[in-house]
Image (cartoon, rainbow, N blue to C red; front, side):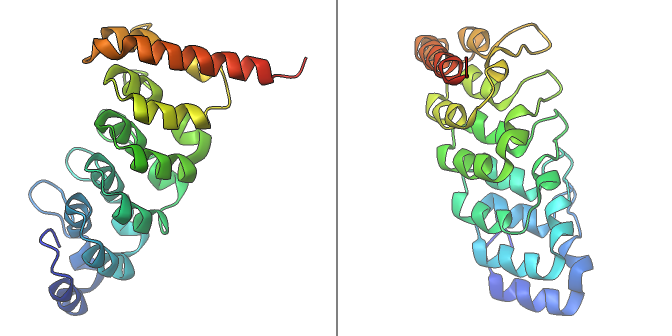
Length: 205
């Protein structure tokens, strides 16, 4: 599956069935994890056909689902296939650090992946917090991923989400200043301020 040999995957699944599809390797990764990570759509589809939602719910030793793996590697085309089967509870499954698939997409700067996940997960994914209290907005701000931040802000409908503090007491704006790419701080500040202004202006009197 990781090498993209869909025909071989199909033959093996015909012999081994769903149990084989869900069998983990030493890192807890199933065949779908590996196909999702590498972007092999045909192999992933064979696995989904046999194992369905159980394959999507499987988590490896890091707590990642196949959706996490696709998201962190920017596999947007394959992700679309997974989203056709994945339900919201599956999308909200956290890794060991409490991060959802949208957190890892935001951290990695995968703009199209983030857009697909926002469309699928709506406000629930936007509001989800990891173990340190970070939302995906915090993550995008910290890592200086302003293109992803733009996607996220377009979907935010509650100003409280933008002023929410993590467990260290930092807002998304403050995370940007303290983050790995501090030079993005002016851009992030401007984006957050404009979105807050837009949301407050849109409120009925």
